[in-house]
Image (cartoon, rainbow, N blue to C red; front, side):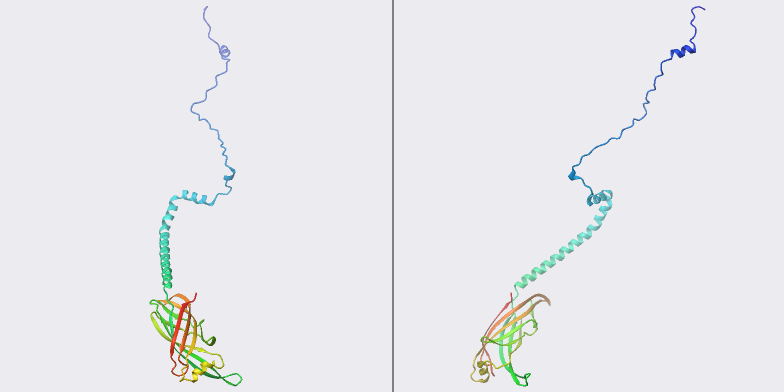
Length: 269
């Protein structure tokens, strides 16, 4: 039948579809991949730490375990507080004790001495050559007075020295006896000094023989004695005392009496 258009064949379809098929668009749901980024940090050369300081490890440990570090602090805090209070109290007690002893030492008084009597005795002995020789001893009776109301005095014989002089000549030497004297106490003691071999000075010999003439004699006595001061049987001070006496006796024979005397005592610097 004329005018009828025949149906398109397969070949015509292939010819009509020569254009390439469109490419499929990217799906909307696919994620977009991110590229790695690089940062450059510039640090001054003088601030670069090659080896981390040890404090960094402690700081990091605190931030890592904050509870454990707080627990240790809380556990040691009472002990440290107790130790601090104990040391403070002990230091305060020691300071007050030292201060009290210092002021007490400033108020200490040296003992006072007075001479009661002086007796000269003649001693005989045999020398190495078989000859009999003689020497003299001087017995000095002393009175020591401790005026300190709180401290006792201990006199030490070791290291002490005593000398008796007539004019400018030393005629006898000896040591001070060891003894303890309580506070506010007056004590009588004896001091023995020994002279060298030989005769007495002329006036001393004359005074011993002529008892009725009562020739007065002047002596000088010097003593250097180490002493220890005690407070309630606790030693608080050590010093040396210097004693310088001048004494006048009526005679060296029988009935000898002290007619004049003067003694000075001071602590050795």
